[in-house]
Each structure stands twice: as structure tokens, then as C-alpha cells.
Image 1 (cartoon, rainbow, N blue to C red):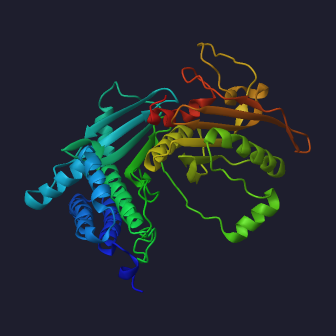
Image 2: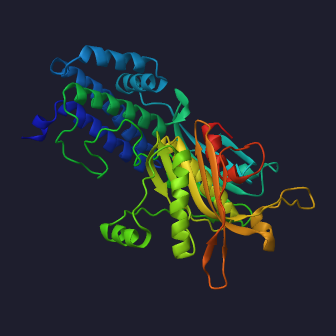
Image 3: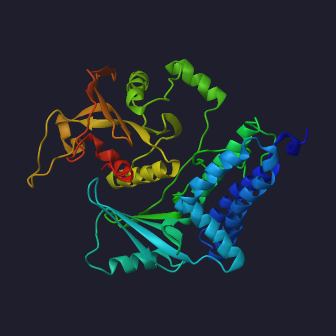
Length: 419
């Protein structure tokens, strides 16, 4: 059986896969204006061709008029889908889209003090020149971390960056093709994988992890306190069978972390305590949830406080890219049983408290719907290095108006509109 025979809508499905590959080609040439324009034009036309190909096969698809009409009705009320159709008509019949190059500048002073501005600059203007323009205004911040993000927007859709806008259209079309497969009683098909390797026949009804709309290579970071740039480095790794076997032998069977993040937090704390007792330390971990399913996880590394501010804002970028609606953050932290103020009346963080601070394992969980949980397990070390766990402290609420344990999640809560 050929791939064409095994897919009930091979023509439309192949065009959708073409769109996935074209999206990545466009993203790869983000900083090359003419190549970016060329790939965008191809992608916009390719996305429209998905529906054209599907319509040609309507006679062989049960219930086509019903579910396709429902898709059309929803698309007409969706600003991104309307933009996609109008853009295709403009590209084919009139001219290129009117693209504008912007630099989104984000300043982070601490967990509370932040700011963001969108400034228009020539597409290939060097970052040093952008920074010089920003700091020519003496009123701009001189401390904290500055992040410059390059973005392309269409004049007809000024509030949406192009990578994000086209990705959402792709997801809508992928959902449509999945509906067509179900109508033909075929959940899967034999269309082969492509290049890049993430382009497969699998149908996504939510953003794909590979379609990152906030990639690190489009951002540059400057530590204003140190007067130097911050390089963002990320490593991808998969759990091999050999490592998984060693992990099970050392820590026992892995826990299932799918579920409501607030309920999962207790299971993660229990497992983390076992690992801490065994290893005498625990790395920080963050899980991203979408509708109670873990869609990604990372192990952040913090070298200093400004680096922590930057990392958690990049974590918020990842939340946006994944369309995540829940997170869990596990880390070792400093803990104090009371509050102390400095000479200016500001709260002294536990990390700066000296000898009256304690170590703890901390699990923070939050959802976009407004659920919060903080689980804290203080611990001490004997003179021989043995870990002694104390009674767990649980807080199932959060006062987001005052400084507290949820400050580190504030960039995520702000992205959700909850901060």
C-alpha cells in the first residue's frame, strides 16, 4: 500500500506538512529580511492551499458539509484566520505584506520592578546601536537586566508577531485535517516523515514544542549591574534506556507527573525528598502542563540573582510558546522562620540572612485558573552530612500582592494576567 493509498486526504495532508517545513524555513531566516519575506509568502499561500485541497476531496469525506461549515464559521470570527485569508489574497493579487521590524525591549529590575516597550528599528540594526538609542534617554533604567527581542509584524496585524500568528493558523488547520481523518475513520496514515525531522504526519491540535515563538537566538541579554552580556545556552537531552535503568535502581520507579499541578505537587515533593536524602542535593526542575498533561520540562541553572530574573522571564516565554496553563517549580531554597527588615524598611531575603537561614526543598505549583500551592520541607545536615528532613509546611493559597514565595513565578503569573 502506498502512502497516498493509506491516507484518505493525502493531498491536503501533504500540504499541511509542507506548511510545517516552510514555517521552520521562515524562522531560520528571521534575520534575513528578503529570505524571510519569501518564505512567509510561500507559507501564507501554502496554508490556504490546505483548505483548497481538502475541498476537492469533500465527496469522499462523510459529513463534510457539517464539520467543514463549522470550521468556516469559526474561522470567519477568528482574527488570525481572517488575516491569513486576506494576506493570501493580497500576496497573490496585489503585493507583499507590509512588514515592520520591531525590537521588544524588556527591563527587569527585580521580581516586581519590570517594564516593556516595543520600538521600531531597521531590520538589521546592530544591538549595540539599539542599546545606545535606548540609553540616550537618561531616564531609562541603569540597573537590572535588559532583553532585546527581534520581531516582525504585519501592518495589518500590528499586535501579533509573525511566527506566533502563523503558528496559530497552522494549529487550526492541523485540527481541521485531524477532523477530516476522523470523518474518514482514519486516525493515522502512512505519509512519511520529512526534513527537518520534526515534520511528521502526526496531527497537532495544540502548539508543537518545535514551533518556539520565543527562541533564544532572537534575543540578546545585558546585565546592567555587571556591564556585560548574558549568553543563553540550552541543551536538549533524552532519557536513554541505560540511564532510565540506573535511575530506577537508585531512586525507585518514576512517578507519574501528569494531572492537576496542585495535586501533583505532593507526589513530586515526596520523590524529591527521597532523592535529596540519597544524593544530599537536588537540581531545580520545572514542569509545564497543558490541560493536566506535562508537555515539557527543563532543568534551569542560576549563576546569580540577575541570571535568575532573566531565566524565569525566559520560562514565562516558554509558557507562552507552549500555551501552558500550569507549572510546577521544584528547587532547593533558603528559608527563614521570621521576617527581618533592612535600614530602609525593606524585607531581607532569606538568602541574605546569614546564620539564621535554613535550607529547604520547595515545590511551587500554579495554574492559569488561579490555583496555587506551596510545599516547603526544611532540612538540616548532620556533621557527617546526613540529611534530616523536618515537618512539611503546606500553603494552598497565595497572597500575590506582597513579596513572598511566589515571587519567582511572577513572570509566569504576569504572562497569564494573574500577577
